[in-house]
Image 1 (cartoon, rainbow, N blue to C red):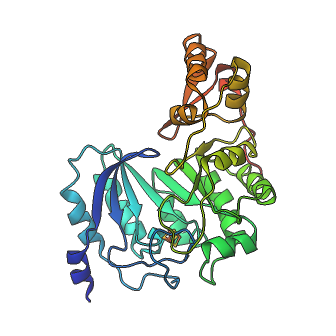
Image 2 (image 1 turned 90 degrees about the horizontal axis):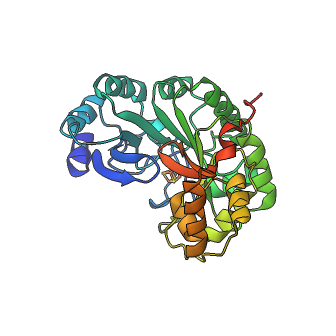
Amino acid sequence: MSVTELVEKNNIIFGPINSRRFGVSLGIDLSPGFKQCNFDCLYCELAPSATVAQQLQSISVTQIIEALQQHLDDKIDVITLTANGEPTLYPYLNELIEALNTIKGNTQILILSNSATLHDDKVYQALLKLDQVKLSLDAVSADIFKKIDRPHSSVKIDTIITKLQQFSKDFQGKLFIEILFVKGLNDTKEEIAKLNEVLCSIDATRIDLGTIDRPPAYPVEAISYEELHQLAQLFESTLPVHIASRKGTLPTPQSYTDEEILNTLDKRPLTLEDIELLFDKKSQQRVQEMFNKGIITRKQMGSVDFFIPTNNLNRKRLKPTF
Ligand code: SF4
């Protein structure tokens, strides 16, 4: 099947969708025909497939821009570069980003990447031109990384970590890190301690913790919302950690005193949704009262609002050193 036929059969542009994490998002699929990825993640919502180090078939920048022109009047916050697979494998990424930057107006441009191509200077330099970048880091131990993400043989986790640290230093836009937890693999205290150490050396706008919420490519299990919340507590409290996964979670709201609420928010800022899942009605009223009195305040990380103790507004994390 030719690329033209593929494009006619498949949409390059999708949405807009209202993304809780990134706002109203119009998606561009940089591999609309079929999956082309340098990972074969256990949790992928696409079918399993052999990894590739580069795209085997690609659409042109002109095709993408022409498809996008028809949607530019839509009210959108962000144009999201994504793919059936890994969008940074798209060979004309730099040209595309430069073209988008000339027509985007006030709209932000975001890419959702698995981080594996940061070692490629062409990709690295292209990503620096974006407004927002989401990079995945599911594990830092080589064996766990290989088990979960099943990368192409050319991909090494140590290189990813080094490049991620460097990128967070060089990038001027909003950097989001995403960790997806798979039961029994990267949810151990040991792996979280290692992830925590690396995350403390990265200057991220927000760190999204999630778990499987769609049928996965392989028979693996999600962790529960409660487990996700417990794992979140294990990270350094000054890291901008956010629990991103909600689907299929059964809330078990508990009663919290004022002091317990402040302690919880001190350790881990919570969204309104977190508060509704974790706190019973009376505790939610306590949160409201403390908010009205100015004891608790709202702080935005990326496009998500968090509640934190007002005293923490001045608390700063040390800049990464490496
Ligand atoms: S990086 Fe994304 S597209 Fe590629 S296998 Fe993993 S989840 Fe699927």
